[in-house]
Length: 115
Image (cartoon, rainbow, N blue to C red; front, side):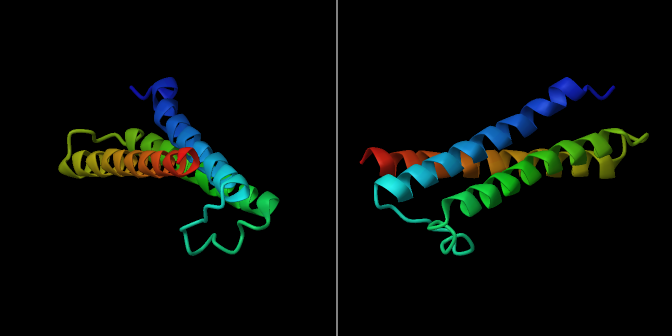
């Protein structure tokens, strides 16, 4: 059975880590002279409200995409098939990869701020 409360936790964690990334990026660029490494966002850092809206929107989309992908996957009737197992493994692997990547980004941002 699909449990929405348990399924929300990974999405909330992605949104939380992404939000911390946004906040540490703003603090680093505004007060410590660091710079945005993402080539798509490098020009937006000077406009903090727009940068914040875009960064938080992307973070929210990532978190919600994981939640809905997981929900749709678990609503299928055939959970013992190979395709379900592979897709479930892919979704969980994608989550783990995103969580690790965002954690590394946050640690890097904090290291730049604290240095």
